[in-house]
Image (cartoon, rainbow, N blue to C red):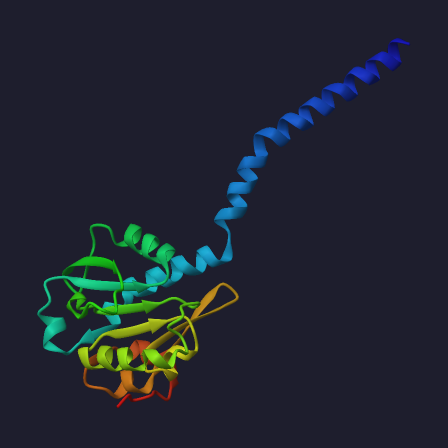
Length: 199
């Protein structure tokens, strides 16, 4: 009877210890799983790439060179905007204070240096956006996206994710055009895509 009682008490204690471990560590496990979420990692990588872009690309148009701030415009990706703001807080790009705003296609005065368009933005593949892309090309805005359609629409850089890594595709126009000065290091590890010159 004493042995049976001892075994029963041990099982109860083990069960209680197990339940306590579950209660204590389940939230921790959930947080770890969430922090390793692939889309979030990719977003952080893209934010870091956008930060490094001014070190690899120079803007040749006077409006961009003379602008008092270096402006990142973000379309349809509030999480990237949040991450980018956290990374760039207090930093400078091309020697200028950084401004990060949500893109407003009806406000040409935004004077974006870089426009990032989200992968699932309705702007991708939208023929009605051709006029906007033409205006942005003329203004010397670097158009970056993570959708393959971005370059065929007249964009400059496509950031493609594969197995938790980010690959580059850049437009022929970015390589050969006169609005940007491209560092040869970027051209060396990027895929060159025939660009669409908008008329």
